[in-house]
Length: 208
Ligand SMILES: [Zn+2]
Image 1 (cartoon, rainbow, N blue to C red):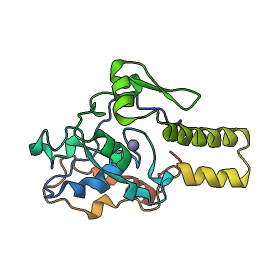
Image 2: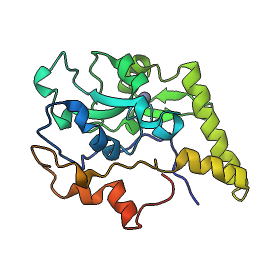
Image 3: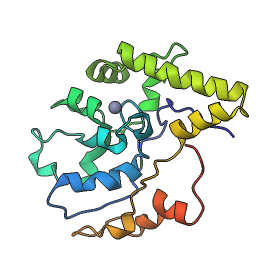
């Protein structure tokens, strides 16, 4: 089974799928954002499953920071899904909105686990978020080697188990249909396209 490159940044801007509104607390967007950004950090691409505490290691990040645009605090379109590490490094800095600009046109992963900047935008992302920090690079290499082992020996049970753990979907997929945001969902019906709904219909792949 082919597993997509986990460190390939999108080459198209992210097109929002969901549009919940009316929450008094932006943190209520979290289940929507988990689904929207496929359970991984938009900045470093690390996944919930790579952390012992899963989604608790992630938070709602404001692309335009709260202090810069307080009016956008509860705007879903200003929120993305980020690991707590990237969120805290970013602080009050404005980063490039991944729904406007595709990071894949600015960043490229090298075989040594480091990211190369293709543009000054990419270099800013690397610098602000310390995306070539030693720990981050060795973490990437760990998963790159795991994929290499799997591609070499796809039938070894231990390797399959590691791959399932690393590249499967989280077991606690959010049931968006049950949430009913106070202001509705401006992208009406998107709940039916959530990972939870697709799993219920047997349409969800094994890995991503
Ligand atoms: Zn991150």
